Figure 1 (cartoon, rainbow, N blue to C red):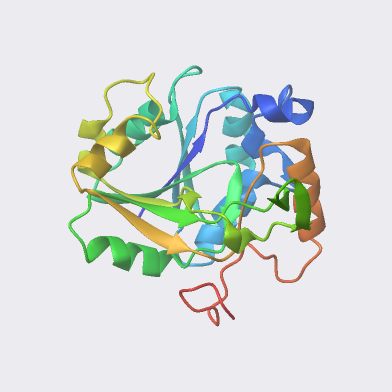
Figure 2: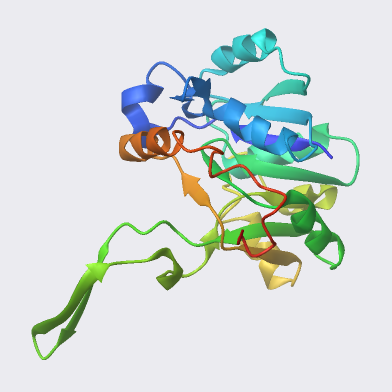
Length: 242
């Protein structure tokens, strides 16, 4: 199954890095985020990649040409101002076969990909997204009659589920994307959900975006761990527990 990575955005919230390179080319532990994403898929047996490019696409093209890993990697220029829906539609139409895996180029998770695919195939869904818990960012304040009765760190399990990417998409999903200027998240996904054609695979394990300089620094700190927390371990069950 081919993996599509959306790598065409401008990454304006990480402008300290992305004025020179696309956000997926920002380095963590001496490797680009794109490399970390593809490596995490390859370790689970997925070696065919399409990188949907846009902003500073030539930087990614040159990097792909220099890769020495035994992966099949192609770039697909999808337009500098194209939104996520348009990038996915172009990638779906460019990819033979029924289903693809797809993810964003600015985050990582230790999703059990085969379990995700099995979940998708056992249903009548055209698309399945991976639902994750957002990282804890704020302290919890409990107030009764104007008095703070509890102040503490918010834990990830307290939060609701959000779209963490890591999609399985049937080729027919392209029919639900109306234009290149339409975000996938506010266009096709709600349409599919309304028709009962969107599945949600719940992943309570590791997931982290890299939208800001702070998150990049946090990734650098996490990279000191062995193994990296975004690498799925065969001893990890489907609930993300070791």
